[in-house]
Length: 338
Image 1 (tube, rainbow, N blue to C red):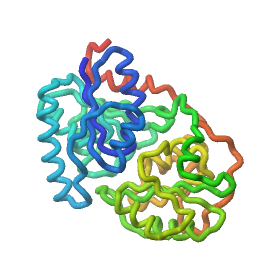
Image 2: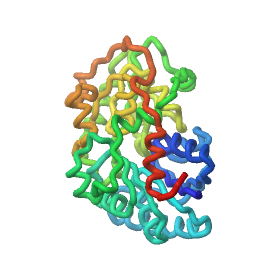
Image 3: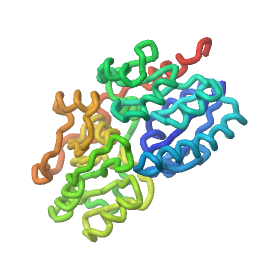
């Protein structure tokens, strides 16, 4: 069977990699398309996943997003018509939802945040199956088009599935010139171009606080070139901005603390047992609500409250889960698949 996978954000190659590998291991032919946004292409290359680059992000405005959707969907339609896939898979790609609906290709969407408005509604309504964590309330999913008959609700975090078998590699520390004697903090900026982003300056306050903290090194992993340039402009020796896509999962595993406005990086830290604070300013989703209630994710109110000290727990995945469960959910969208 020919299967089309679309990656539209930096987390998607990580999330979808174990599924792609297992689909190919079963003899399926997988074609991968991707757009450049937040080092998506660089991560695909670092993971050794072949892809075809198509289109780019439309920016923060609704008009820009609409134009990008129309333009990229048109480009994808020509490519997909040539390859004629029989199943489509993405983690929230609206472009894939549009094109798969146009050509009547059964599609599967994964997602673990339910408040992205029209993006989720388009993707979920078009999908035959929707894979979500069981911590997201059913009524929220139904409201945005994921009817119960479509749902494959899996336990735990998506990060626990793609980190199955993961062994942290200390080479990333050498690559970035990390001083192992200092407290290592990993910082992820907010998703400023996302529909669900709500502005606040807590992220900026946090970066400035860390720049002057002393005996602390902070690695800021930007989503955009502008975010990277802003951190470099502070010109602080202990603020590090990687020039290219890095092994962020190993970096988080060895970090003493993570401060992130991004859901995936927060949950990677949880899965890896690294203390983590969220600066997310949008509406909190069901997964993060559950993590906060369990004390595994903390909400940052003031950068001065950050516990800047060395951790005493070893790096590694706390609760790895078998991705085969997700593979079965994906293939469940097509009847008669062996």
